[in-house]
Image (cartoon, rainbow, N blue to C red):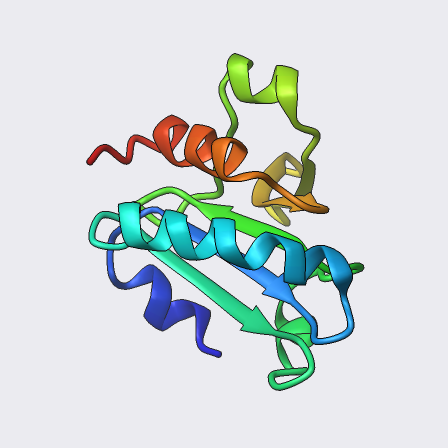
Length: 130
């Protein structure tokens, strides 16, 4: 898996990390397929299987499956709007700028299962329309 290649597409990114033995991942598959069919031309919607691509956990903070990692079309980390924040909880990863000591938001992650409606809400919040 190459995140730089995915971000180079200049589309919003909805990356789902799953595993074979995760019952929630299996339950989420039909919804993810539906969302891909509906939004796949306008956003990068990908499912990376941790069992088949373990290096993803070296590149990104995957603590559990399913995990969704989200980026805006310009490659910046997704910042959920108020409506999305009221429905879902996100983890925000930051780093410190060595020159200014300011925190820099580098990644937005959701851990856990999402419904098709929740995925759609996130994608619409990312500006994806069909």
